[in-house]
Length: 542
Ligand code: G1P
Ligand code: ZN
Image (tube, helix red, strand yellow):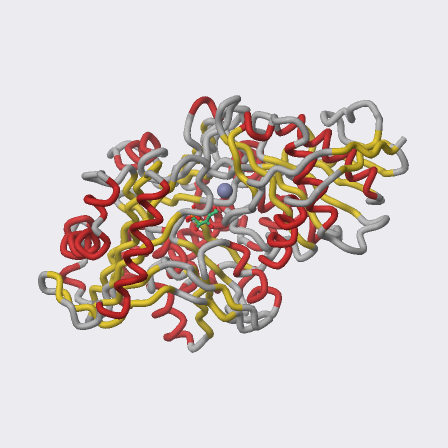
């Protein structure tokens, strides 16, 4: 039986960089999730009788919202919903399932790399039929609808058992509980040379994967241990926990430090990798070498033909604007297209669909390709293993050879988290006001060549996205970029991205923060970071 429940709007349901993210108690307010899910359905056309995919990263509140979403999808008229067993689907796996089964779209329940638990973060994101995050015109429509919503529809039915695979009925709608891992693992096996990677691991190459008690555990165990033969235990923190074991499931040098230290120790593993809460991010470390995500994109692009799925070569590369220009040099050498987009994976979808870009990446530990329409953590890890196996070189040798050939882009991001919102907005407003006067000004030995607020003209659909980050470019190719995070749930996060290009191989061994020191000082002088935020140092440096 379909019930219509009256409701009043919440005015804060504006999707950010990647869906709606709030603290769990916010989502637990009466009708909060229902309002947002109905706003999604009300913003879509033509899904009657079609299939919806639902899955999440297993965090706290995942199961409750899945039950609500299922009953609302049945009331809305979907013909079928496919759900991962246990409510689990990593973000890239959800993207793949949407594409493979020709679903109308999908709802992904995740707050990605943000912590989980009763007082931590939760999120809801809608993905369209290409498997990728909904573009801005849809997220804007969802937000508009959420401010005017008066009722939602839900069927009156018992909860669905999410823990056994198979198909059940929910009202007139079918619910198919699927194995969350198999389709994805099969896709990886098609893209990469599993035989060569298996031989590499068989020869004693030691791999350590940290799934950070988040969604990739079951995927990594199936792929790395079962299909590629790594010894049991090679995947650590493999069981997805609702609170991620109280960890912050963000794979970077701060939150995956234990793995990093382990790989760097003389008798530790040869290769380490970690993924985030929902499995779309990755960190790759080889012995003696942390690979920056920007370099990872460039190295993957330069070596793409090592992997069977990319044997024919790549059509183009896309990167978010704050990501370093390392990949641009690869694109130039290969004579292929290079696209610079705003932050957020949703901007890559059109380029991938149009065949303009094959691989994409973001400095925020995100790398992926046209195999799905999300960034994909395990995909990046397997690509690296495939390259190591094919080139018969260590990660360190591969990266150093890359720098020697293309030059090195020293790169770091400084985050100032939970800054007062007014102070952060004031800092950005002040920067915008200064843009016109910056060119020609000097900061130490650095002279500003140009400064702007990045705007993107989508070459596929002609849409324009403005105010996507302040860029200050210096003579010689160095730059600093400032933007406010669109994924945080408390206060504001200021991100400062710092980059220097160094063509001279004799200067490739400098410690990163040291190599960037004059740019870091210039960033503070230009944006008055210390004065305006009251902070003496960033919260997180990656
Ligand atoms: C952050 C990253 C961005 C990424 C997004 C979702 O967004 O910076 O690259 O696409 O998370 O994982 P931000 O908080 O900067 O808006
Ligand atoms: Zn994520």
